Image (cartoon, rainbow, N blue to C red; front, side, top):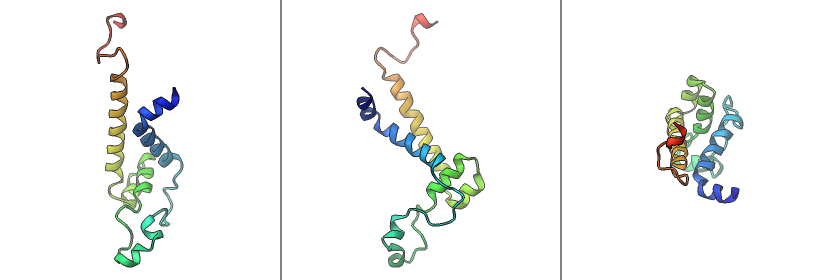
Amino acid sequence: MAVKWIRQNLELVIWMGAILWLAFGVDYHATAGGFCPFRMLGLEALTGLEACPGCGLGRSIAAALHAEWKLSWQHHWMGIPALLIICSRIVTLVLTQIKNQPGNDGYLSDESA
C-alpha cells in the first residue's frame, strides 16, 4: 500500500525529500563550488564562464530555509523565488491529494458540522 501511495505521489515525495535535504543536509555557509556537473566535466574552460547559471542555487535555498535572506541572495538571486515556487507546488499537490480522496467532493460533510 505504501509503494502504491509513493507511486501515485512521486512528485510530492521528490519535492519533500529535496526540501528536507536542503534544510538539513546542505552546508549553506560553504563557499566552495559544491556539486556542479558543468565544473566536473570541465565545461567552464570551454565556455569561459566562471560558473554555470545554477551554481549556488541549492545553497541559496538552504540559506533561505534557515531565514538567512542576505546569504541566500549572495549565493544566488533565484534561491528565494525558487523556494516559493517549490513550496507552492508542494501545497498544490497536497491539496489535490486531499481533494481526490475517495468520498471527498471538496466540501465538509453534514456530520462534521
